[in-house]
Length: 113
Length: 143
Image 1 (cartoon, rainbow over the protein chains, first blue to last red):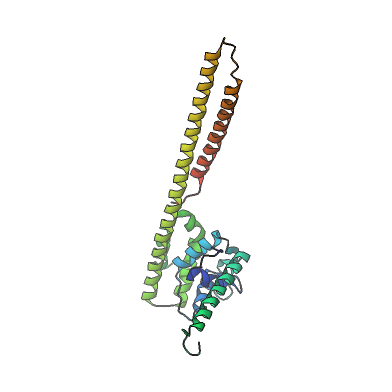
Image 2: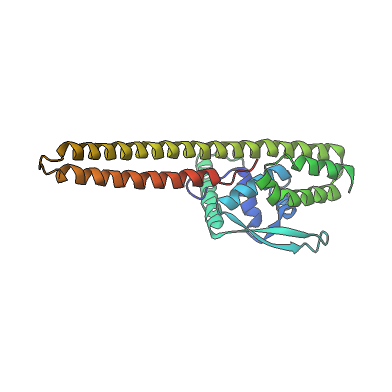
């Protein structure tokens, strides 16, 4: 996953959400929605399925169970990005930059974009 | 606990066991969080449908892994029996040569030595294949 293969949108958004800090499942969900200005909405099925595959691929890791002071007093599993995950994210973002550069060259982007 | 959360918990039971043991509590928590902050029946229905799609996906993934593990175990079993067959036939060959050469004074070392080496290799191959076959069977597969 961390090699040359492109990341799926769900994986990319989860890595992006975890790039700044560790988050629990619902925190990831909210951050993904915020990062995408509400365009990407991830349900629990997609989120935890992706988390499973990403932990297996070594892109993210399970952290301690902690209490989120903003939500309630339930302990939650937090997830954090690994060095491999950061590398995969950087590779993917570079790929996106190249795509945007090509689009610029061909004047495919609308004015002001 | 309200009815919707109970129904969601039941839905989570459809996930493969390993997945359920690891994520069911977190998913239920997330479901409660979503319902606390967002309202509407359509949204709850969407969560149920999305989670059910997740169940199908994870079941399919587990089935694919299980099939691969089973295929690998079958291949190792075949290798094990082939190695045992080769080893057994070679031993039979050595015995035959020794019986035929008895009393003739002929030097059969040149035939028996490589044959014994082949037997040793066959035994090692069979043992290794048996270990891999057993390991393949033990691979954690959730139902």
